[in-house]
Length: 132
Image 1 (cartoon, rainbow, N blue to C red):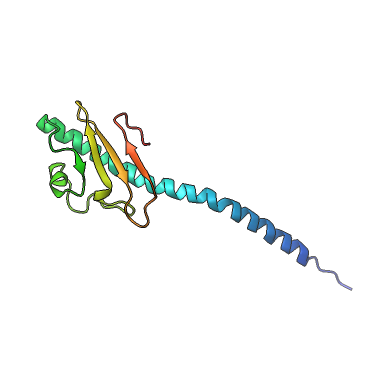
Image 2 (cartoon, rainbow, N blue to C red):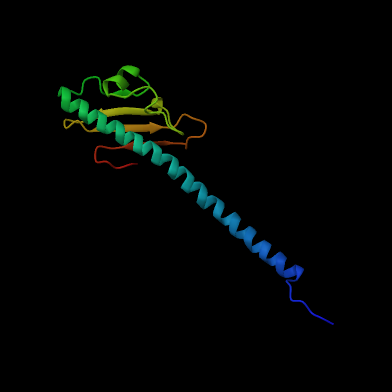
């Protein structure tokens, strides 16, 4: 009688069980990474807004009219943004708010996602460049 080597049903079930446990453990870890990636879009756009505020401040020497939400088309135009420039996959212009501009022209920008696919909460790009 010829014997072939193969996995038994129990060995296959043990492998499936281990793979299931690993998958169940990795889902919460990946969810946190997904939100972190979504916030990186907001961080990049907030940095672009901060640069535009600094340029505008250097050109005019004043911070008048530079504070407010970016859904204000007048503020967008003053900073040199075209329609759609601040619209991303998870955040739209109204999600960004310039809360303060210091005497060096550096803005503090608050971001709160309003889209259904945006991460929850609010984060701030402070005057020191920290994303909190």
